Every structure is written in structure tokens, then in C-alpha cells.
Length: 107
Image 1: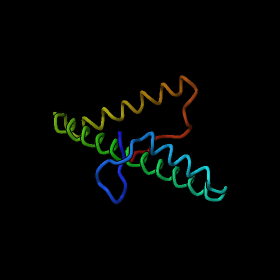
Image 2 (image 1 turned 120 degrees about the vertical axis):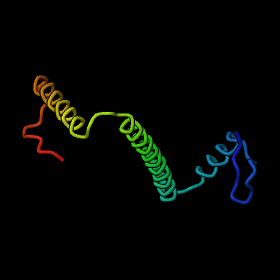
Image 3 (image 1 turned 120 degrees about the horizontal axis):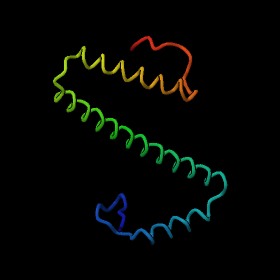
Image 4 (image 1 turned 90 degrees about the vertical axis):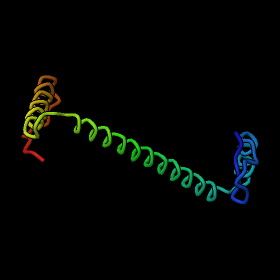
């Protein structure tokens, strides 16, 4: 794979050469600048993860809406089923000793 610069939209630098250039440049930085680079890279990673999570959430919502359109049960029947699942999960948690004290009061 090759990467492009801001001045050129076409790929101009192979990845391995780019990594080598960045490594050489990093070696010349003082500790303060290296810390800034580290924070910048951490911020880029966090943004990427956030974008991936948002994309996943959009896919989950789209799938849930599609399933809801296909469901022939009434809203009340769906809610009753949901409540029974909550109770089943709660009972399993109690049996495992991982239940949180208190009662579910609704949404």
C-alpha cells in the first residue's frame, strides 16, 4: 500500500518508507515533543474507535428496526416478552450470586 501527502491526492509513498521516515523523524524529537506525538496518536485512535462504535450502533439500530417491522406481535406482547426475559436474566444472576440488589422499575 502507498500513502499520499496533503499536496498530492495520488499515493506517493509506500507504507514501509513512510514508517521509516516517521521513525527517523521521531528519533530527533525531544521528550516534550514525543509526548505531544503520543497524545496525538492516542487521540486519533480514540476517534477511530468512537467512529467504529457509532457505525456499529447504527447497524444495530437498523437491524432492530428491520426486525421490529417483521414482528407481527402487538407492542404489549413484545413488552411482556421483554419483561419475562428481564426476569429470567435476573433469576440467573441471583442463582450465580451476581445480582444487583434492588428492583427494576422500568424505563
